[in-house]
Image (cartoon, rainbow, N blue to C red; front, side):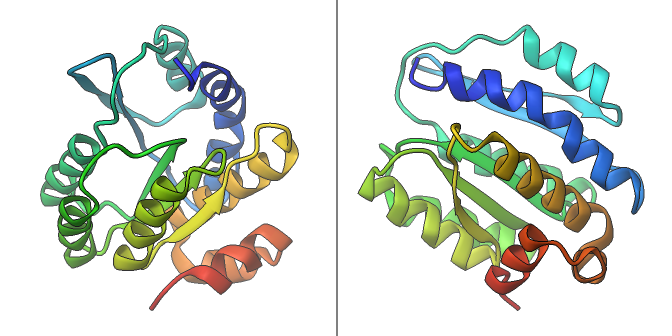
Length: 187
């Protein structure tokens, strides 16, 4: 339930992710989420923002424990089918064994999938887990501040640029957010 305001913001920001990515190539987004006690789902792949927004609008938040491992497992399975350059995760807590999550992150790293881990709030345990997942995958840990919608829009846009054009596209973009991602991208 703590995610509903952030979910609503994400619904409004996702268009910018597609907009930036369209300049470098086709972006395909799959929405994976968990809620409640044992529900974890993934959508089909979307290549246009209107369809993704419609799918997101049908989802509501429910209380329950985190299921980050199931999301990472899904990303690993997707990367076995086709290259998966980026995974974006937004959360505010972590109630799972960090060592197990790191093992799954290692599988993503072996498949060249970078995790962009956004943390809302200041949960220290979650920060440790998110930072470690990002480090292992060569991705980036970032703060998610719903009060700073424009900054989030620009960061998501930069991630879209990376997902479709890689490091070179991000370097060519030359914005503050692109430079922030480049500074924090490993390898």
